[in-house]
Image (tube, rainbow, N blue to C red; front, side):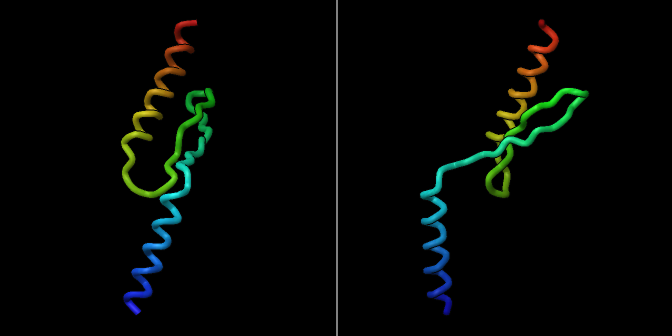
Length: 67
């Protein structure tokens, strides 16, 4: 039984490793402006997604104030 579970987990791991990384964009309204933020494709900490979102938000704000 434990061997079957381990084999199934290994197969599932191989299937997810072959899938491309796809990140969805969630649109939020912040101070009356719509911003797209990147969401995670799996649970857990993801500092790269956090950095991308900060850069996206700062870039949008920079363009808004310097027109």
